Image 1 (cartoon, rainbow, N blue to C red):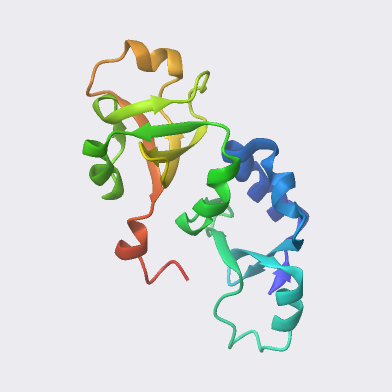
Image 2 (cartoon, rainbow, N blue to C red):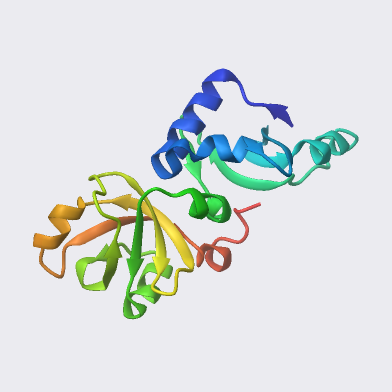
Length: 180
């Protein structure tokens, strides 16, 4: 467990900024305590500083996880967000997509969102912007990337992909081995 280097921090914050923009400040400067990001076995964890200090007493080989896993660095040093970060992305997300109840299950199986399954989309969502996907009951289901801007969505046909799938809560069941 170690602090992120400047390069790793920059890469991770650029990825987070696609989804929450200036909300990154709110993640770090919280009124309920000091929180930080730590790297352990190529995974980035978001953890309270007091818990992190207690974890220093545990041997690195015996430490499995610490705090909430936000994602991991690939071998090519790219950062990939995990679905475990969804609870922290959803409150601060700038751009949102709501799916119809009939399309929720297909999204939770790992498929992209089609225009036919689109319930609503945040106004002025740019193309290729990170979006958090919600059900029509405002329950966060996952996140992805907008394939079309809001203006393009209005003109597209029902079988057009509106948002590319990146992660969903169904991964807790499908990929439970790789999430820790």
